[in-house]
Amino acid sequence: MINKFKLLVLAGVLLAAASARAATLKLGDDAPPLQVGEWVQGDPLAAFDRHHVYILEFWATWYPPCQGALARLNGLAQQYQSEGLVAIGQNVFEKDAGIVPAFVKKMGDKMTFRVALDDQRRDTNGAMATSWMLAAGQYEVPTIFVINRQGKVAWIGHPLALDQSTLEQILTDRFDVAAHAQEVAKQEQRQQQEHALNQKLAQAFKTKNWDAAEAVTKEIEDSLPPSARFQVAPIRLQILIGRQDLTSAHQLAEALSDKFPNDAYLQNQLAWTLATANGVDRPCRLLAELAAQRANLATQGKVSGILDTLARTQFLNGKTNEAILTEQKAVDAESTESKSALKKCLEAYQQGKLPALDETAQ
Image (cartoon, rainbow, N blue to C red; front, side, top):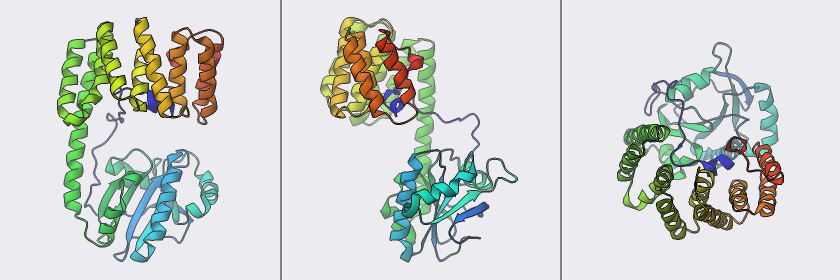
């Protein structure tokens, strides 16, 4: 997706914390009861027993990554079936539950485990969504819950984060749930601290208080291990541009681009920052194009978001025909809802206009 390439460190990805409730379902708690609305596939299951380990994967048809997560779960279910693993695909947050059976049928042998719809008769969110997902402070699909043989919630998280070693420890009753819960609590505390710093940084940028922004950036830098502190450099680049210290901004961006020539995300981030800032000079625009070229080279010209950035830098440097050709490649490489936004950008270049930022696939 284009937006994932263009999001700056400053922006982050924030949950709707204002509406979020404190988690009441935690690691080590008894698993909530099953309150499904209908079993779409597999034998109905009334309750958990002590002879099996259960993985409940909460998913929705409208989010494409769920397909891969469900296929992975299918593989785990087949691999560990003889060791007592039972998989359940719990559909939640679905706009139209009527399309789920067709989705399951289309998945075929990639989704052979039990599949259930949520019960929305008395709860518009769904009984399972409320008592499991929302109770655990989980708001995104796919999310999995692993229930051990003692009927306790042993693990919660994104499917790709569950490694086979952890699953095998749970299956053989060797997994220390309490120790895992402590580590998760520490991670959540760090995330809360990062969230607070991001909010302070966003406020400093909003008010153009560059001294405050630099102070918060230093706090963020100090919280990172030495090997990762280079990640704050793009924030400093934005601060320098905000101060209109273009000479220093160019020096910093050039140093970063030269140091990490094969880092596609960083190169694209540098290019987009320089290409969308107000008042940048020609040296900065030329550097933006160089960084975009490096990002495109690193991704073999196959990523629409990077191609879109490159087209913008080309247009800014007077290369209208090249920008049109590059943007056409971006359109051709995109297959999601972002394609329409890319087409609007292409039309703008064809008309000799720089696309407005609200027209881009941000």
